[in-house]
Length: 128
Image (cartoon, rainbow, N blue to C red; front, side, top):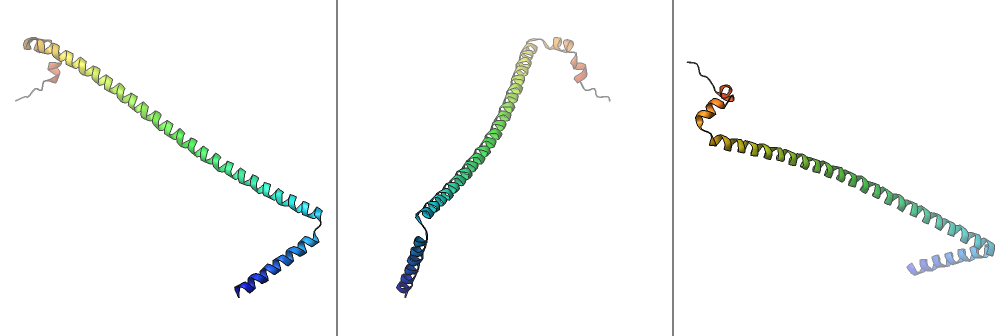
């Protein structure tokens, strides 16, 4: 049964094709070929334009991500520079305090008590 339908379809298509070929002259075939080629090139051009737009969009997205990453890295470096500056300040204050402490350790206690103006401010007086 399938073979019969295949043969019938094949015969019908070949007869339609023979009729179409017989109706068209050589000039009509050239025009049809140009129309088909024109459609092919038009669709190929559309495909190239779509590919260009997709690639352009992807590059634009990548550029935006790269700019965002660059901004984040600049902020990160700025934070690190601020942290380094704070640590340098801390280090300077530490060494200044350490050198002052070393000087104070070498002085006698009685001299410390008389020369330190902050002693009066820092002492807590208890009234009985």
